[in-house]
Every structure is written in structure tokens, then in C-alpha cells.
Image (cartoon, rainbow, N blue to C red; front, side, top):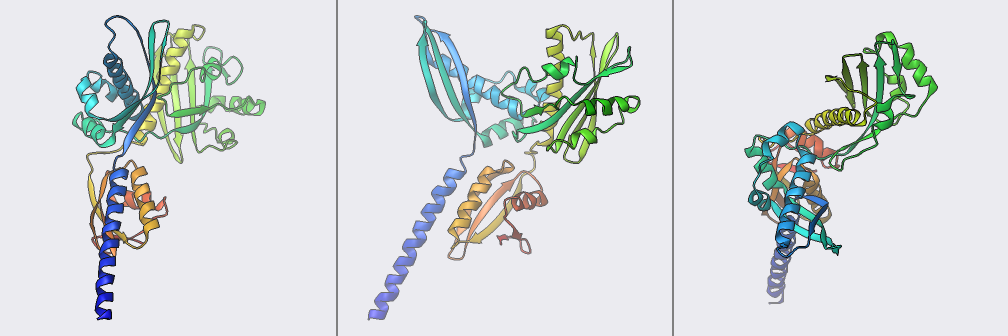
Length: 359
């Protein structure tokens, strides 16, 4: 009799812990699946008049937050496709918002907003517009601007190079690239001048290797009386591409014209960086993986990582038993990219069967 009671008691304990585990996993997954784009420090000011409506201020803030997000994840050409988006479409993608700070100063209402956009809804909206978003990864580039004055057969690297001195004067919050300018070095200047006759073929490696940066942009600005030709050598890891642009009648002594050229070049580099990190949301690869149900720590780590990876479109628990927890994953990429991405987080898989198992 005692043995029978013990068995019944053991079954009840097993069922209890099974249900408890399911509850823990359910709420854990529900939380991790609420992936969102966070946009903060949206400042709006409006005169506090008789017909003042706080909702109008908030609506303006929602629009401003949305376009701040779009400027981070969409290249400049595609941004034009959605400049007429309706307010109710923007609101439909908002998960939460918060008022960080508000004040009345000299009859002006000021508010600072934080807005959270649902990643899946934003991706679906962009996909309908045939726009592929990018992962908003910030990065540092070594930036070497060289002005070649063709009329004088001379070049400017540091001294009197207005691009060098003005490049970092203004920064935009939606820019992902931080530019690191080289220090003024006489040895570097002489090295560049030594290669003047083959400047377009020169790779600048002797200079680039002095800096602990894997990515660089060398921009050659050929200046003559009529126009300016710009050759940009953009290197990301081991891959290098060349981009040619031209500008008409830019006077470097006029600040507005110089700023126009600098902003145009920065947009070019931002767009290239975004395209490098673009997510092809049209690829939706379904995967099923399983993980040891007794390893709670590894399960928690897995969910946190799946939540971090922008190429994960969605994930959820499909089933659960006493041996394994099964996850269904939708991935915006190929199986090899998934395995490589997960390996970077120290997660490896046995892929011999249809359902992959976490090792």
C-alpha cells in the first residue's frame, strides 16, 4: 500500500513540475518574442494655446520616432517610398510608448518620448513596400580623405584639407558609422605623396595597418576648375569595393557647399553599410530544433540569443516532453547562415536528422 501511494505521489510531483516548467517556458517565450525596435529621445515642442491638444503632440512624436527608426534601417533611396505613410499605419506598429519628461516653459509644452515598434509588424510593412530592412549595427571606420588638386599636381592630406577638418563637425543620431580620422603624421604624408602618380592604385595599407580597425574608407577627391570627382575605396574586413561620384561647382570655401558634399558622401557610405547588413525578409526558412528539457540554463541562454538575432523572424515552443523542448523558428536566411550565426554564440547543432538537436 505504501509503495502504491509513493508511486501516486511521484506521478503527482512529476505532473506538477511538468506543468510548472510549461508555465515558465510559456511566459519566458512570450516575453522574448516581444522583440521591438526601441526609439528614444524624441523631443517635441508646441505652444500651449487655447486649442492645445496633447494627442496632436503625441501623434507628431510617433511620426518623428517612426522616421528616426526608418533612417536607421532603410537606405536613403527606399526611404522615399514610405514618406507618405499614414498616421494610423504608424500607430498600428507601435507596441508601447512612454513620456520620459515633460515641461511647460514660457508657454511652450515640451515632451521627450520613447517609442517601441513591433519588429515583425515593421518588417511586414516594409516587405509590402518591397523594402528589405537592415540590421542597425553601429561600426567604426578609419576615414582617410585625400584632396588631389589636378591643376597644381599636388595633394592635401592634413594641412589645408577642409574635408579632413570639417568631416566630423556635425554628426547625425541616425548615422551608424563613426569615422576615425588618422592623426597628422609627416611620415604618412610623405608616403602618400610618394605614390602620387599611382594614387588610384595605391591601397594605403601601410597607413591603415597602424590602426586597430578592420574597416576603412579611403576617399580620393580629384579637384579641377569645373567639377570634383570622388573615388571611394570602401573596405569591410577583406572585401573592397570602389565607388565613383561627381559634384559640380563645389566651392570648398563656402560652408554650405562643403556641407552638401560631406552629407552626400556620408549618405553613400551609410547606404553601403546598410546594404551590407540587409535582411532578406522574403526568405522565411522554417526550422525545428530541440534542446534537453532538463538543462534550464541552456534553454534560457538559447531564448536570449534567439531574441537578440535580428535574422530570427519569429520563434516559439511547438511542444514539450520529459526529454526535450522543441522550438519552431522562422529564419531570414539560409541554414548555413543560421548555423554560423548560432556558432558565434557558442551554440552548435547535430543536424543529422530533420529536427536539429542542440549539442
